Image (spheres, rainbow, N blue to C red):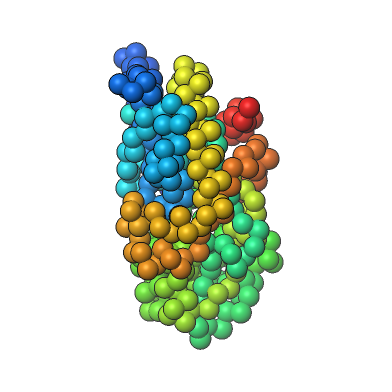
Amino acid sequence: MLKIHRTVLAGVITLAVALTGTACSAGTTSAAGIKSEDGTTAVTVSLPPIVDTAPVYIALEKGLFKKHGLDVKVAATPSMAASIPAVVSGASQFGILGAVDVMQASAAGLPLKMIGNTTVTTDKPLESPEKVYVAKDSSIKAPTDLNGKTIAVSGLGGAGELSLRAALDKSGADSDKIKFLEVPLDSMLDSLKRGQVDAINTISPFTNAAEKSGARYLFSAGAEAVPNALQFVLTTSAKFMEQNPKTVEDFRAALDEATTYAAENPDAVRKILPTFSGTPKELAEVMQLPVFSTDFSVKRARIWSDLMTDYGFVKGNIDINSLVVPKG
């Protein structure tokens, strides 16, 4: 099996390591924990504009953070990886990040802690936000037909490629004999139509466009390879958690309430999504939503960490028992 020693987060992790050293040498302390005029504790959460962060906006809208004594500000980031330096440096006290991204950063030595989650992967392929498509007239009928072919992925060395490789190998294909080409999500469908790739591994809401174009669904990598795994996780720095345990528990409790609400009220997610993500209202109303869940455990994290080790998606050791901080 091919061992992949690369990561899409390499540059970000290098920056975050530098920031960690600078903060430590300068004795930097965070402004978080300062009481606002109304008696709440001020904190900042770093968020990419994706549906998995919807519970944070629901918590803000419904006053759940205020209920738990917090004055929460959102620092919007252009990408998921951008939240890592913010959390490590103390510019943000919390972040919602991909579980694999956090594990890669932790293995590189960054002092992060996973303290909760908003979403998990589904075990129902047709309900997965992540799907693989081929052209409607393609001769590819099964994953095993992808040997010797090219698949478009949104990023190399991350969760998408990892779950795809694992699902392909599980199906009887050989991921070492398949080329993975990095293509932006909004360009994948054109690449498929032009024959530049043989298949695309895309996510909701881009799956809607693929289906509308007539592209043919083949399989869902995440549901096949990593069902019921942590997907997007609430993250903080080890330093902040040590110095502010009550604030961490209060934030986690408020987010859990909002995530439970999101799971039980998908229409609320669809309504709030366009306000922070740029997703058109008409698309938000029909796109496949992720599985919102507060079921947070080392076991769910280990689904990813074991695969990352097996496929060489991480350098160093993932101390999963230290990285994941259970509730209670």
